[in-house]
Length: 290
Image (tube, rainbow, N blue to C red; front, side, top):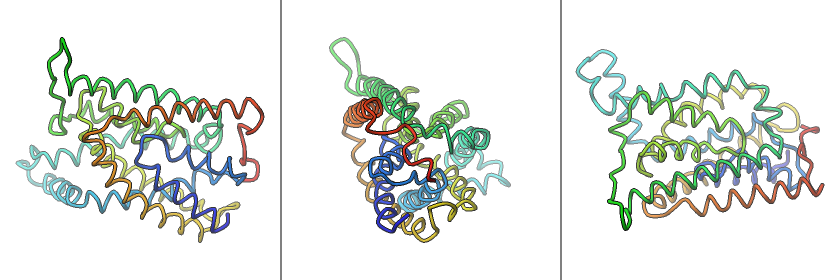
């Protein structure tokens, strides 16, 4: 991998990690369209450490408060009813599904799941799911001619059951094209949470999963065509760009619909199917040389 490739892929990772359009799919597609080798699951996981560092800084006050309350709850029974302490436990509970499934399907994640036809399918299907969830949220928030405005849930109403559902939604993002934020936000909206609550828990839930995945994949960094230097460079690029994107996205979702992302996902998926069918792209473009 050249330094230019690592710059472009780091930029793509930072731009797409927090948007509901799938960063892993865009890394895969960027390499395929450019005629580069597939950067692989290890490169993707490690560069995601950069974007999660952006989450740690952006949500630093929340994270420090949650971690502090969680530790206090281990020895102080009175603290166990504190919302921040409960959030700490719920992040742990919500991280279980992706941990178990990530280890179980590691070989599939690094191989068959990177087929461009599967990515096209998940882009379209999850785009439609996000569209339905977004429409439900909008209907509750605005009401209608024969409907009253319905109050949606905040994170203070999050329990173990919903935390696990969020966790299984996040685990779906092990398949490129699903999108970690897209799946968890869709799940949250379908369960009746506000856009801001679903997005905030989605980002907090991603921290332990992504950091653990990145550390786990460190042993594979530098193998094949992806060297350590370009990987670290891409990670720093992803961090800087990711911080800007997450700040913009948290403002965006308070007033805007997810429909632009829905349309983009569906059109990209259809275009990808057409390119593969026409023979312009191989479903396994770049994989053989990885």
